Image (tube, rainbow, N blue to C red; front, top):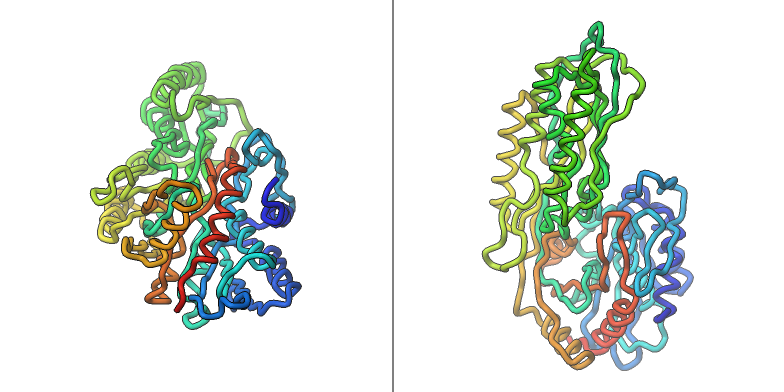
Length: 480
């Protein structure tokens, strides 16, 4: 597989467990990597790594380039796969032109971008001006590394973010985001006499995916489908709700969700028939996006208590009503999502029904309006909501000098003009650019399909194309 230096570095990263907020071993590996090359290597207070490589002879007067990526990855797996993301390496395999993982996320987002930056540091045959590599932590769950990056640490004039996911496309803008955490209190009661039919109702088989990149595909959200199944059962069939659990990452569209319920005597058959009739309805609705969707129930251990009926109805109505998916398409960039919400995580925890979402928008006021819509739903249900981790989007600059350089280089290499786009996902450029005004920024990368899901795969030929492009861009960087 070519280029071998890039693939070797990527493989090394797959051996290191590095889920978001648990990526300390990857941080130490990168720190030792920079030191082993004899390069100036810094680990800042939060854990970001900065490695500096001097210009090659004759290129000292070129503008400095920062190659930027993040070392954490989204931990998602198929339900039948045994994998501990904090201990186990990612097991990879080759399927034609694609590298895949065995039932888990691959971590090409953003392992392959970091591997390319590492390879530039290792190289002795690439002409370039001063190079800095910035690898941040916890991009996927809070942009923590970028948010905590101190002004004055970076020296470069140009930032090339290596976290985009389609070869042949250059990105010059991205959406901002904010995390919403809602909590609705509920009362618990003892299991009523004659209601000793405990069952687990489960929604599974949804494709899931990246809550920014894939939200436009309108795939099924398992949490929403579970609420759709449960609300009529609680309201019309007398079913009592004991617990709910679905999703585990804000930036991943939830693929599975489940609830423990108690069914009255004589109603088990009716509930089973209701779910049996609901399944083909859902399969028809999601025949294209989620053909493997499934909803069903099985007997389970009886819980010690259940939610009060009125409170269960309030919680299910709220979950069903919370904004979900694409809220508005962009007027400025046709075909791009402007505003969206991912109803990512639901839980029953110590008398509180918790809903966690990730809202995105390229328009700050639209993001704020969506947050108010969610607040209204939750407060009507008797709950509260907190908004945290907000960050603004990255405003496109079509006159970016490095953009013009990169377009020209791509045309010379491959005989066609790369697409110039903005992305409905969170790139760190907006945050870093806010700390370093005037930094000239573009994002690019090889082709990754279905990131944030176990279907994630990395296109092998695109890695070589992107690597050759990156090398040519470094050589073409203009003088200061």
